[in-house]
Length: 156
Image (cartoon, rainbow, N blue to C red; front, side):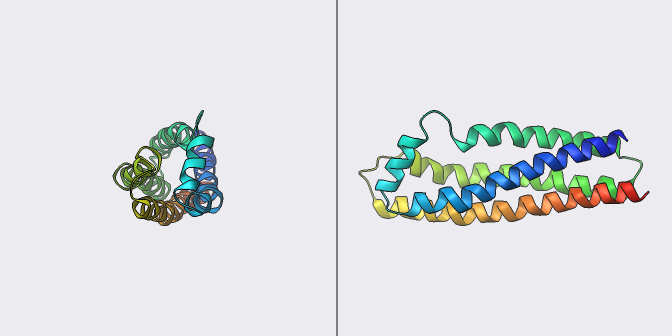
Protein backbone atom coordinates (compact mmCIF):
# COMPACT_ATOMS: atom_id res chain seq x y z
CA UNK A 1 0.00 0.00 0.00
CA UNK A 2 2.78 2.46 0.91
CA UNK A 3 4.78 1.42 -2.15
CA UNK A 4 1.77 2.07 -4.38
CA UNK A 5 1.21 5.51 -2.85
CA UNK A 6 4.88 6.47 -3.27
CA UNK A 7 4.93 5.21 -6.84
CA UNK A 8 1.75 7.14 -7.61
CA UNK A 9 3.28 10.32 -6.21
CA UNK A 10 6.46 9.68 -8.22
CA UNK A 11 4.29 9.27 -11.32
CA UNK A 12 2.69 12.62 -10.56
CA UNK A 13 6.16 14.19 -10.31
CA UNK A 14 7.18 12.56 -13.59
CA UNK A 15 4.00 13.83 -15.26
CA UNK A 16 4.78 17.34 -14.00
CA UNK A 17 8.32 17.09 -15.38
CA UNK A 18 7.12 15.74 -18.71
CA UNK A 19 4.45 18.39 -19.11
CA UNK A 20 6.85 21.22 -18.30
CA UNK A 21 9.54 19.84 -20.59
CA UNK A 22 7.15 19.49 -23.53
CA UNK A 23 5.77 22.97 -22.81
CA UNK A 24 9.29 24.40 -22.99
CA UNK A 25 9.87 22.61 -26.30
CA UNK A 26 6.55 23.61 -27.87
CA UNK A 27 6.13 27.14 -26.49
CA UNK A 28 9.42 28.54 -25.25
CA UNK A 29 12.01 27.14 -27.68
CA UNK A 30 10.38 28.49 -30.87
CA UNK A 31 10.28 31.94 -29.26
CA UNK A 32 13.97 31.72 -28.36
CA UNK A 33 14.87 30.82 -31.94
CA UNK A 34 12.50 33.24 -33.70
CA UNK A 35 14.61 36.34 -34.31
CA UNK A 36 17.98 36.08 -32.59
CA UNK A 37 19.30 38.24 -30.92
CA UNK A 38 16.05 40.23 -30.46
CA UNK A 39 14.15 37.13 -29.32
CA UNK A 40 16.81 36.34 -26.72
CA UNK A 41 16.64 39.94 -25.46
CA UNK A 42 12.86 39.62 -25.10
CA UNK A 43 13.23 36.30 -23.29
CA UNK A 44 15.78 37.84 -20.93
CA UNK A 45 13.39 40.69 -20.17
CA UNK A 46 10.44 38.34 -19.68
CA UNK A 47 12.28 35.85 -17.45
CA UNK A 48 13.38 38.45 -14.90
CA UNK A 49 11.59 37.28 -11.75
CA UNK A 50 11.57 33.53 -12.22
CA UNK A 51 12.65 30.98 -14.81
CA UNK A 52 11.77 27.38 -15.62
CA UNK A 53 14.83 26.40 -13.57
CA UNK A 54 12.99 27.42 -10.40
CA UNK A 55 10.29 24.86 -11.20
CA UNK A 56 12.64 22.04 -12.22
CA UNK A 57 14.92 22.58 -9.21
CA UNK A 58 11.98 21.72 -6.95
CA UNK A 59 10.08 19.07 -8.92
CA UNK A 60 13.11 17.04 -10.07
CA UNK A 61 14.66 16.33 -6.65
CA UNK A 62 11.26 15.71 -5.04
CA UNK A 63 10.48 13.19 -7.77
CA UNK A 64 13.87 11.55 -7.34
CA UNK A 65 13.30 11.20 -3.58
CA UNK A 66 9.83 9.74 -4.21
CA UNK A 67 11.29 7.21 -6.64
CA UNK A 68 14.00 6.28 -4.15
CA UNK A 69 11.40 5.84 -1.40
CA UNK A 70 9.26 3.82 -3.81
CA UNK A 71 12.21 1.55 -4.54
CA UNK A 72 12.74 0.94 -0.83
CA UNK A 73 9.03 0.37 -0.17
CA UNK A 74 8.63 -2.03 -3.09
CA UNK A 75 11.83 -3.93 -2.40
CA UNK A 76 10.09 -7.34 -2.02
CA UNK A 77 8.66 -7.05 -5.55
CA UNK A 78 11.76 -7.18 -7.77
CA UNK A 79 9.96 -6.44 -11.05
CA UNK A 80 8.48 -3.19 -9.72
CA UNK A 81 11.67 -2.26 -7.87
CA UNK A 82 13.80 -2.50 -11.02
CA UNK A 83 11.43 -0.41 -13.07
CA UNK A 84 11.47 2.30 -10.42
CA UNK A 85 15.27 2.05 -10.37
CA UNK A 86 15.30 2.54 -14.14
CA UNK A 87 13.10 5.62 -13.79
CA UNK A 88 15.41 7.02 -11.10
CA UNK A 89 18.51 6.28 -13.19
CA UNK A 90 16.94 8.15 -16.11
CA UNK A 91 16.30 11.19 -13.89
CA UNK A 92 19.89 11.12 -12.63
CA UNK A 93 21.06 10.91 -16.26
CA UNK A 94 18.79 13.86 -17.07
CA UNK A 95 20.43 15.91 -14.35
CA UNK A 96 23.84 15.08 -15.80
CA UNK A 97 22.66 16.05 -19.30
CA UNK A 98 21.16 19.26 -17.96
CA UNK A 99 24.38 20.33 -16.23
CA UNK A 100 26.73 19.21 -19.01
CA UNK A 101 24.69 20.15 -22.10
CA UNK A 102 21.82 22.50 -21.34
CA UNK A 103 23.30 24.87 -18.77
CA UNK A 104 26.23 25.90 -21.01
CA UNK A 105 23.81 26.72 -23.83
CA UNK A 106 21.51 28.61 -21.48
CA UNK A 107 24.53 30.56 -20.27
CA UNK A 108 25.25 31.60 -23.87
CA UNK A 109 21.60 32.55 -24.40
CA UNK A 110 20.96 34.35 -21.12
CA UNK A 111 24.30 35.55 -19.79
CA UNK A 112 26.57 36.33 -22.74
CA UNK A 113 26.50 39.78 -24.33
CA UNK A 114 23.86 40.19 -27.03
CA UNK A 115 26.16 42.40 -29.06
CA UNK A 116 28.47 39.48 -29.80
CA UNK A 117 28.19 36.70 -32.34
CA UNK A 118 24.51 36.24 -33.32
CA UNK A 119 25.33 32.90 -34.96
CA UNK A 120 26.60 31.65 -31.62
CA UNK A 121 23.32 32.65 -29.95
CA UNK A 122 21.30 31.01 -32.74
CA UNK A 123 23.34 27.83 -32.46
CA UNK A 124 22.93 27.71 -28.69
CA UNK A 125 19.16 28.23 -28.97
CA UNK A 126 18.82 25.53 -31.62
CA UNK A 127 20.97 23.03 -29.75
CA UNK A 128 19.05 23.71 -26.54
CA UNK A 129 15.73 23.15 -28.36
CA UNK A 130 16.84 19.84 -29.87
CA UNK A 131 18.34 18.73 -26.56
CA UNK A 132 15.11 19.57 -24.77
CA UNK A 133 13.20 17.13 -27.00
CA UNK A 134 15.75 14.48 -25.99
CA UNK A 135 14.98 15.30 -22.37
CA UNK A 136 11.25 14.97 -23.06
CA UNK A 137 11.74 11.50 -24.54
CA UNK A 138 13.82 10.44 -21.55
CA UNK A 139 11.26 11.78 -19.04
CA UNK A 140 8.54 9.91 -20.96
CA UNK A 141 10.60 6.72 -20.70
CA UNK A 142 10.98 7.24 -16.94
CA UNK A 143 7.23 7.84 -16.65
CA UNK A 144 6.46 4.63 -18.53
CA UNK A 145 8.89 2.65 -16.39
CA UNK A 146 7.26 3.93 -13.19
CA UNK A 147 3.80 3.30 -14.62
CA UNK A 148 4.80 -0.26 -15.42
CA UNK A 149 6.09 -0.65 -11.85
CA UNK A 150 2.74 0.46 -10.48
CA UNK A 151 0.90 -1.89 -12.84
CA UNK A 152 3.09 -4.82 -11.81
CA UNK A 153 2.60 -4.01 -8.13
CA UNK A 154 -1.19 -3.82 -8.59
CA UNK A 155 -1.20 -7.20 -10.35
CA UNK A 156 0.52 -8.96 -7.46
